[in-house]
Image (tube, rainbow, N blue to C red; front, side, top):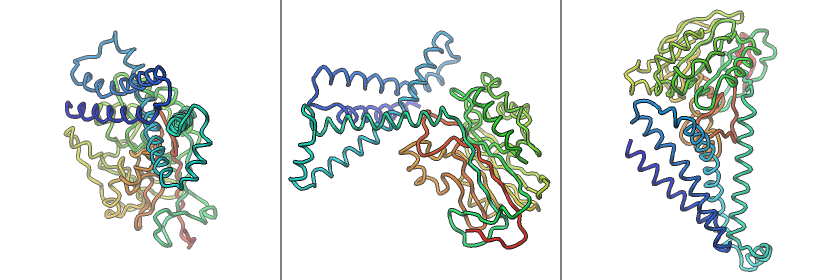
Length: 408
């Protein structure tokens, strides 16, 4: 833990120096520069409070009620600053790229650009103002996306799979098929610090409106102490589906006591499919639905991941919180794997980076004879910002065909 604190502190302090150099121009009055450095220092100090809070939580035997209210406000502001400072850092790097591009321009063009700079400013100050304005606008956009709440993402697939195994498949002809199996997926809801009962109730209302055959929760539904959050999770007991609500844990349930969260979800009517599966008969066909535990289980002496063998059914589905199980699921001859975990990166630049880290990062993919769908997250973790991704409830319609209808 001490190594983490030291590393996090060094990285944040280096970021503080870099941002100060890029956002506070030398041409500005000294009093203004001092004020801006102090504001930036206060923002960084608030952000650094997060890892120290984690250390205090591990060291303290019980929370101090006298400081809990202040701690909640500091935590909320720190997570907001995490998003804003990340965007400031991103656009500061972009401004450095523009500086390099400026230096290689012809002298005459450089002179024209400098002539357009307002009186009393220079190129560095103009770029600093531009970075601050653009980053703030993006932050407000991302905050609005979170305040707006989850939206549906409708996905249509047709089995058996035909055509070329394209990485990003699209299906046609499903409207000609009379019956479908409707699956609703919720992932990474993160009931905890910020996701409370009203948000959970809204998710449940949206789920019920879709009249799904099966509802699947693919992990990271709980993110805190269930003893304090059971009431916030209570609306989950109101979910209606034709054939049940199925659940697997994510890494965050293990952090907070997976068995306690599991007991709570059972009280809400969930059916855990941890390293097991069962066959479900619907009006449109049969589904073998199975799940696998998260690799984090190894750290907490819980059941290690073991993908069940498939059983005869029209379509076989594996619930796996992390999309890293795709190859193993394909070897077991599953038709579809539903995952989450990545949040799609949540906001830039991480929504770009996540595609470098995960082969399957967001949305629908085809891997050989299997489809993989990665939900971007119904809730959020960390910074309450969404840019380039959405808070989603996935509505997956599976059509079973017997005639040859092509897919592309």
